[in-house]
Image (cartoon, rainbow, N blue to C red):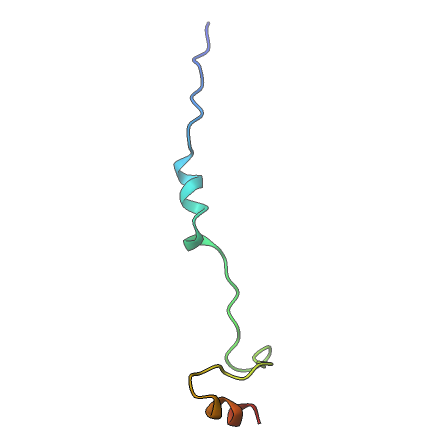
Length: 54
């Protein structure tokens, strides 16, 4: 009984899962616990962001 030589090529399933599309990301709460944003909203109009921070 002879064993067949194993072919260790690239694992297609592993390479697909390793893509950034499948990375887990944590979403920030928009309201309630954990929703406080330390920095003011950054926009093109700096005056508007100044009033949001105050």
